[in-house]
Image 1 (cartoon, protein in one colour):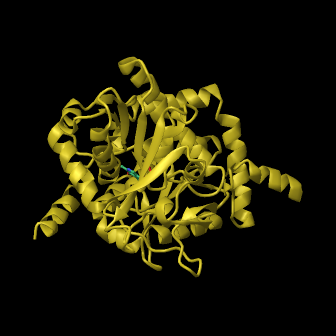
Image 2: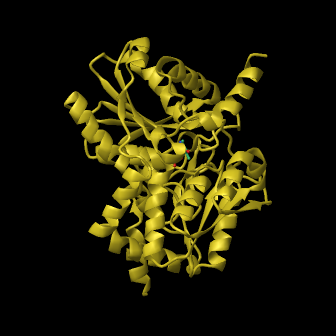
Image 3: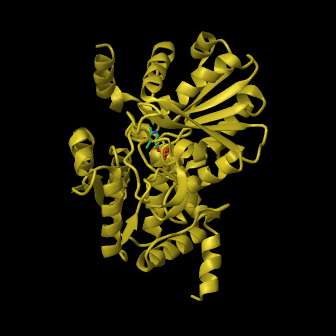
Length: 402
Ligand SMILES: *Cc1c(COP(=O)(O)O)cnc(C)c1O
């Protein structure tokens, strides 16, 4: 390939100035192969029919768009609808993407999949889909996370995956990503890397968005049925940004629909214990993409923190960086405390225990809904269920009440 072709090729992976592909040559070759395969199948009727079949009969889609009447009355303002991604198989939106990528891997003739995982949610989804489709599966996880998330490690092992503990650095998600990338390079010909969020080098952010946009395709149809119009506001939590970009996608062209992403402010934006990438980050290259991220002065990536294991990522998908700078979407943050209170409020008003990640989005809804007129409509994406968080919430409340 000539340099010019190489540049043109790369331009496809940009959202404004963000995105691209900053990887070693061997990886670029694999990414080009992935892009070619994806271009071939993304509009292929048989591929799309198989994807739709597994979303429906395996994962249980479509998920309901539920009018949370008790919560709405309690807050006394805008009407609040919950997009129930928590009702997917395995309890979150992650499987939407994993099913798509595994079907693509199968088409590409790959026999083995690898993935990184932080808390284990993406690892469990990948291990489950690998079991279902008869693929070998290896999951990379920071050694500290392996200790903290024993239950998910055991789940992955039950599903037949081999879990590797990364012993470097902070022993969390960043080291897991590095280890998975290294393993990919060593076995690049027969291995498919199942990426867990709308991040990384091109074409991953686009592939993950395409497999998650089912959330807003359904939500748009559902809100038109229920309200006869589009919502005024769509809210989602933001880790790497996959559930948010999926919830935003179909509404992006409708300028009258406001889009709002909520990051983790952890113990507070004035501490160094948060993961508020778009709120406090700067532009640079991380994990093969150009985007906002939390960097130290020397250019290394800062350690991040949140009560929610799915939100403590120091970068953000490049399309969110673009939407922020283009002012098409707004990004704010919620603290651990606010998220826990939001989790408890939804639990007590609607009998639904949301994931602590999703509770960050709910925390912002709780602030905004009372200030909006009763004829306004908010859709909030409940990205997952909170069963996995119950023990951590119990500990948190015990310490808070001391
Ligand atoms: C992983 C996860 C997230 C964060 O990931 P995104 O890519 O930002 O969506 C949010 N909610 C739940 C329930 C998760 O499991």
